[in-house]
Image (cartoon, rainbow, N blue to C red; front, side):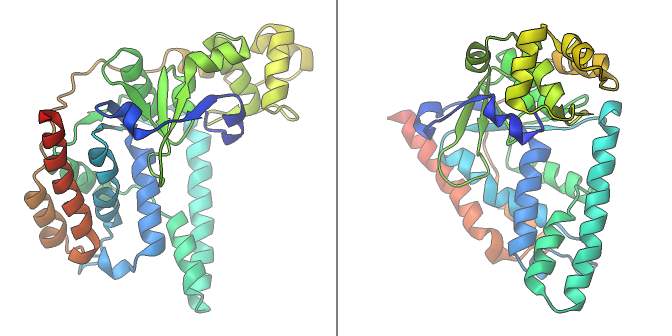
Length: 325
């Protein structure tokens, strides 16, 4: 569920890292990376992640700062990258591009008037995953021996498929789409301080008295990344309407409204493009090679990443000791 309002419908509970240690997590890589990328840009001087020829690789700092959270809690991340953009998502992509362009115009204006704080905040909102960011992210993950999966389409759908088929223990995303795509459990707050949250599909359906199709129908009435919702319908109203009229079509008929491409969107959530994959979870990071790549090859300031690399190295030693005790 791209629509955060639908959090009200999901069964979500706090969970300790101790409860999930040893788990393999299929992480929505674009979602995870973007959060660390924007945070880095917002709070870090740009000269620390900009090469001499002006190429920005703030992603490298974000990755080194974000991965230790997995390793220190004995979690194996499997980074799942988006494939081809689903045609149904074209409007959402165009809207995001327009918002980035508007933020860029405001950033330039803030910089011209000397408002460095506002300029940094707006610059974080203009970030996109460039070809360089995509390539360097994959290479750094490879050096750190983090498994990578290339999804045929939506990364969240591939994560959900991997969790549903038992390839991994959980999906991992800050968004809610994995629930609609059928992930039995999703770990959230993996980019935040403190313990994560567990979003549970079976508990959600039990609470609502729906099957997954009913949940998808309610979500579509509220609005998803693939469609605008029906005016005047929020989460509670959507659930009530689906219960009263049986399904999405009954609600739309009763209200005399339409959702463009509704059948295709419904089918996308219920049976999304996804592939079966094999994942090698015997992770053995080459911290020295990764450090050389980030600092020597890309010129990232060493003091911005050294503590992250130290934490990764220390976590591997500690995890090995724990497994022998």
